[in-house]
Image (cartoon, rainbow, N blue to C red; front, side):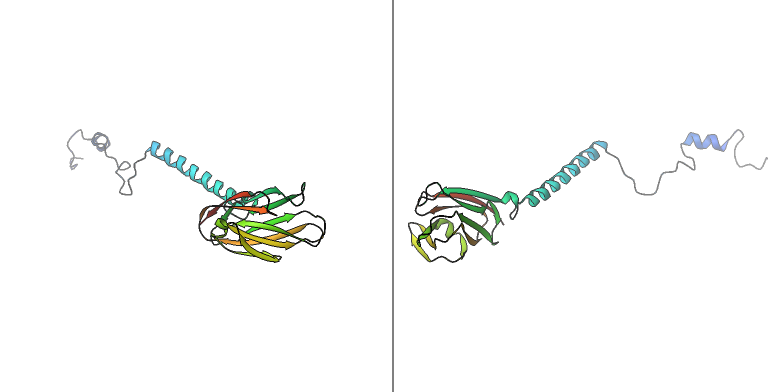
Length: 194
């Protein structure tokens, strides 16, 4: 073994351990990533909050918060001065969308059939912000009076329902008033999403 290029007393395994390099511990030539456990924990928290926000938005949309659902409907009641003790209801959309159709449903209970008419007044400030209305069944007359429009309908046998269809033109808060047979006005509020 006199042909060995290593000096006497040299052992290759001991020399590799002393230099800190072995064939198994060579530095990786691939992607080097540093781990930051605090950063990773923050990112997981943000991700979880994002998922909860998505779930909340989906549930709110399903309930009608953004229009056309259970939470989007509201009902107002007002006494008909021509028939004390009888309540006329206005069912409307509390939440809606600008440039999308919105509906009011006015329901009047059965009253005496006397061949007359009953009226519904809508405020002009509301009508100025919407396209329409389209009224079903059609009114006998429409007349502009005291900062609004009065619609007259014939008194019919049994309960009556009138449908008003509008198309709000601008997003944001929208308020208006209605009154039945020149009674006291009742104010309603809507929120319109873009």
